[in-house]
Image (tube, rainbow, N blue to C red; front, side):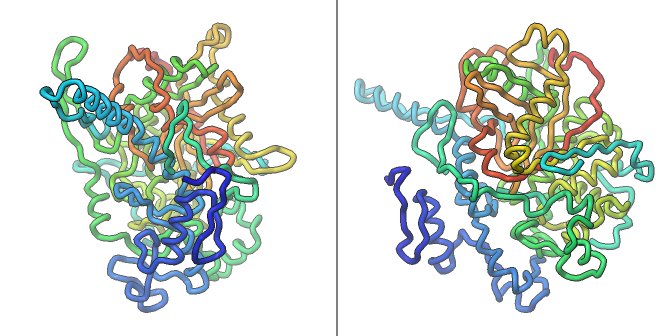
Amino acid sequence: MASSAEVLECPFCAYKDQDSYVLMLHVEERHTDDSPFVVREGPDEHPHHGSSSANGLREAPAEHAAVEDERWLLCPNPECGEQIPIEDLSEHLDLHFAERLFESQQEASASADHSTTSSHSSSSKKPPKKLSKMRHGTPPLSSASEHSFSVALDDSSDSSAFAPDGEGWHSIHHNSKHHRHHHHHRQSGYDDGDVKTRPRSNSEKTTLSRRMIDVLSPSSSKKLHKSKESGAPSARLGKSELGPYAYEDQMPRWLYKQIEAGPRVSVMNRIGRDGRLIKHEVVDNETPGVLPVLAQLCGIDRSVDQAYICHPSAIHIFKRPKEGGFCGYRNIQMLVSYIQGAGAQGHSQFPPGTPGILVLQDLIEQAWDMGINEISRVQTGGIRGTRKYIGTPEVQALLRSLRIDHGLQIFSDRPEAGQAHEQLLDYVESYFLEDTTREQHEKRPKVVKTHLPPIYLQQPGHSITIVGYERHKDGKRNLLVFDPMFHTSPGMFKILGRRDIRTHRPEVLQAYRRGDRQLKRHRDYELISLKAHPPLFPVWDV
């Protein structure tokens, strides 16, 4: 195993890297014919420029296709199915490691116990214990600029966007004349919940390839503004902004049917506090009740000085197997879960249940029809029925169309303001501090349980939902997040619903923490926070 300081060289070219796994993937991508890790749109699939194949893919413009295809690799995890920018692969695999860490430790411990038992008594051989399956599902513009959007500013917006139709969801307004979300190793050891990867220099920082400022003020980008007015093709974004399927007209039929059908829903029985049998629905990609557990774990962790948790109604919603990159939609769903559960502003817009991806696509297109961030339609070519990534412009358009008050903050590396990730952490800390009551300020509890909404966070290549904030005794700071790209870990499932957790569980907390190591990798962040607070009632006591 190479040391962390050793530079490894590709045997076929001058490429070098300190990470052996990244080097291996480089060989797969650049020097292996028909590698399964490379996204290709070959001549067999797209015989003519601009034509569509049977599964709806359109060939990229020739001047961009060769360069853009080299940026994406298929995640080696067979259950993931995500196309990952090559510069983000190491971080992506780190999070897969954290996702399964508890299960790996349990199996290793069980195997060790079995080995010890067998050496003492060969007559009482038993197979090693395996982790039992838990329920898999829901039991001014500057370096740091801010915009607020309230219903008073959007009187022209239609407040009745959609309604239930008996069997599901449907859009009331379907006047669209035309039928983005950015995405983003593995290690042999584990140290106090921190997974180690090769540090990234400032020159390697990633930046947002599609900025909200270009949507809010198109004239600030002369090229984009000129292209929009003339209808020139250069206004159309490509794979760098919209992902590997930027040019498809329609997602594959099998995937469309899977998304249209929605996640699996089952009914489970449990015994209530009063002893009665209670039936409740379980959605296979939704996990409620995570935030009360995170609050307990932060309280137990001796390294934590103080932590803040958002409203507990927010649900962790994540991608389904082999679904691909719909993280932008999943983060919208998590915001909606808070709005519904807390009875917050806009809750009457949503029928019971989580709005599906196709419904959200209709709502975004509908917002464009209303003139909200309409340049996004020119940039994307339309998103209905496709796997094109969405981002801040689409989330903001949807919220404005539904008259849900929200604020937009933009953070960028600037000499006069500092690094973007430090500005982000400062903002999130002040966000939670502003909701601290006088009693909490005086007593200073270790964990502050708030009624604040979760926050949508766009970073280069991916988006996540911020659900809390930690400040440690050594000065380190973390965001607590729900990441839709990763499932709820088995370790979390094992302790869901418990109110008496007394053991420090760093392997569980690891999957939800994002600190300096991860955040300083990016030059830009965009953030959307909901402004209207929900009715106050003792929700944390329920």
